[in-house]
Image (cartoon, rainbow, N blue to C red):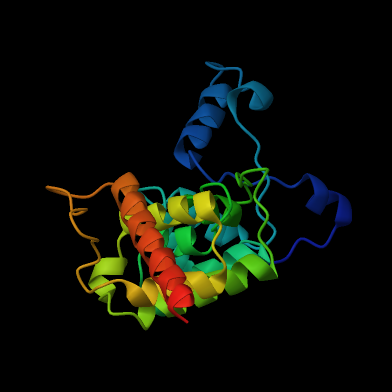
Length: 233
């Protein structure tokens, strides 16, 4: 049974280091140095990294040295926090809804630069690779909530809208037209079960740009219908 004891000396804690990767290689180097076969220069032959504040040393070691690197799903299951309130909320939505990560990230970053799910993994490791122009706040979060709710209550099946390319196409459409939330809700409610507007369905697997054009057609149709209704009234 392994027993652990906390280091309480302030100076020792400030300078303490632990091998978290390549432990066997480090041991071998120390042995070679003891045998006079190698001059082990720690500064040149190892890389020092800071342990993320929200991870224990054991968890940090396990995350990068467990036979294979942890992937995004592994970090998702760990329930670690990223330290970014909005990203943590997006991550929670992925776990709660069971929808694909790229779908949720697209819907919750409308009007923002592209953000891939792996940024959450990096944040949990203490590495910030978020785009500098990214501005997530209560408004973007509320918008994501309402758009997701609109898709859930629409005629479109979950298996259809749980599609990264569809979500990316919707984001391209939003970034181009910047519709009001009421327009988005009306638009999504208008779309048929098969999603595609007349003659818009492509042969084979659809790309994000084709979904973008499809949302654009529905949006134009919706606005034309609304204008006709106003003229009639």
